Image (cartoon, rainbow, N blue to C red; front, side):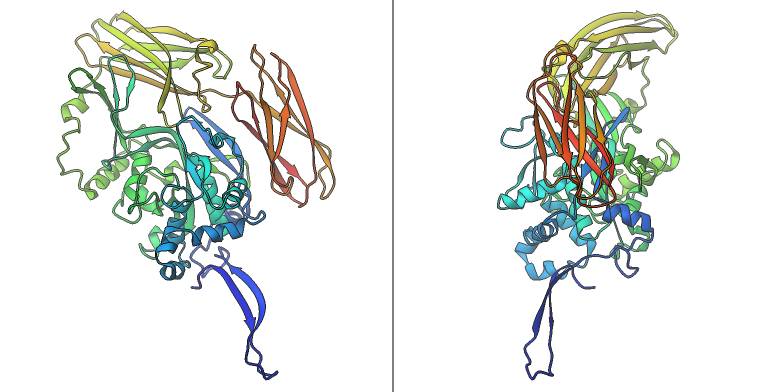
Length: 586
């Protein structure tokens, strides 16, 4: 039950006649997941290797239809990281307010997980990373440009513990992974696709659109293309053994908990079973993976809102983490909820609402049963009809189908907006309107083309576009058709030109070809790799003409044996943060 942290070791000998202890030095006590008596004991040794000792990880991003991934150097055993992690504890609000009580609780992983989920973000306590979702990153780094945690943590210390600018969800989660692994707590990153941000705690996400299909900022609720948080492994003596195991922690500052931006630990078992009354922050996490969605048409002139449709199966899809010992994706959705749309899943949802007192509470903003039960006369969807790549024209097809046995006249307002990955609209790209009459049971297709020249200047560094078609059916209810698209960046290729050996130079070649019809400038290559390179290697690359290939060579001098990972990030004026990684056997 000893608290973790730095200890002084001394010995006292009476044989010399002196009663003064002699100092032998200091040591740091950490959690031990290999010890059966420890609260973080993890019986699977391969999982211990992955979730405590592994310094490289893979984070999943993109959207539910197009999952992408990138490498990350956690670097929990790199220079000075342990000292920085201990400094985080001593700079927390909990320590500053009551140092004796705080230190006495440092044998409890659930306490430390909660404290560190607050300290990784900078909102209340001058913590490590300052969040920024504006798309403007002056005075700091684009969150997508980071490739590892150790640079961030070292920068935080070197600046006199001023917040590092800037981060978004995967940065917060990756830094928290580094800190908890460093302290001996098994931890991994989790990506939830179509992730709900339920700001008002009613387990429902409300989205509003005007008559033209434009998204309106009338609700603090939102649905993110993806959101990244952490799971840490430890026992829950406060809840009982059935709630031990993986616990959800989230350092991204979304909503306050007990007055500050922290989240968790929430037992994953409690989330799956709808036990939302249990500590900590279970309602918020439950909503992230299982909220219901309501889509409304809002008349800006009259203030009247009309339910377009509701969905109970949209939120919480393809929940992903890295496989143990492999660079593959593992789907853990079934560990968070029962099969979507099943009776068991719906029963758990109702149970959660009842525990929160929502079933019997009058909600004037809720749709009526009649609104929820109404059935549309037509269906619609966007189909992709070409490559989804930055630099290529965007080709889609709007498919409308008449579900009824009588003709239907439909007026369609379509828009396309660039967004950030949280689906916040940034800039309008394209709009169009059509009117069509559908014969009974007829399906019609309408091609859509958005040239690269139209979206090039509007695209954010997240490469995300939201297409919306609001269909007004004469004599019927409205239908909303949506598609969130993530465009792929071009690829870069890494070649290791020789055998990698400790303390011997080996050449590396990175190849990139400019795929667009215009020159790209301000080209920069950023390279890092634990035990392969000390610090960050940055290489300026000359401008590349249309179709031109660049070959950049540099040398590595590995200083540890074993499988290592080289992480590369390429940026230029037309493409932001193209990432790849390569395993190097030393």
